[in-house]
Length: 272
Image 1 (cartoon, rainbow, N blue to C red):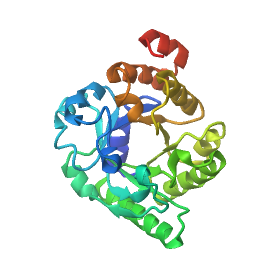
Image 2: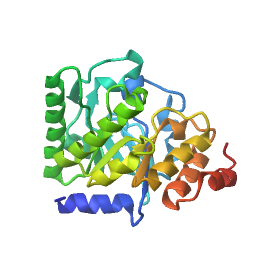
Image 3: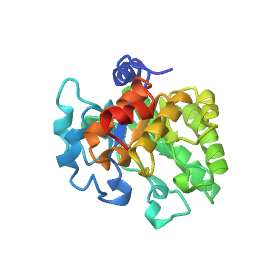
Image 4: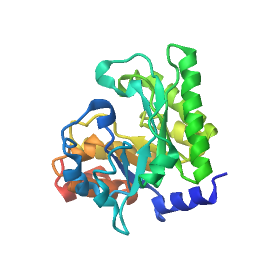
């Protein structure tokens, strides 16, 4: 049962809406500077219309202006670092370590926190350690009444075979909820994604992963995920690497919140 603090902060995140849009800008933790995020403080204002922004623990100090206003997006700070996220180095394992505590994240302005969980590693002890790290995040967030997003991100990411990704996400999302996550962020797995949302007793958020070839493809991914039961979308590169991040974000909000079709929205905003 969520605490009063968790319930209040979750209600503020959704703000009466069925679905939410979060923009992730924490890629520098794993990839270093990427196009669209090289000088993050200079572009952060273009995504101020999101419901929340996801950052690494050191970046709010450089981007705090976007959070000053009354209607500002909520701030989500990542708690742990896993080696499997550094895809460019093709790690086969996922060793997870804490980067910051929930209390430290709150001191940086966090409204929510996010903790990752990667399972089915080559060594069973890695899985046990990753569950231990995740459970520590849950324990800390409960003590402070801060909602936590649990991220289920299998080693290999979206390069994993579709049937393997489906199974890993199906099991992992339920485990993250059982361990105490208030929401779960994970891959959209395609036609069977509805099985995942039905089996997960907390809101599921679909992530965007790699930049899609066309902007309408990203809108279609969001549309399909929402129609399969997702309660929100977490996009990073698909927003900040768009031709116009602000215009694309506005389009994404219409797909996710108003459930308009990608074709109608793309035509309205001049996206292709």
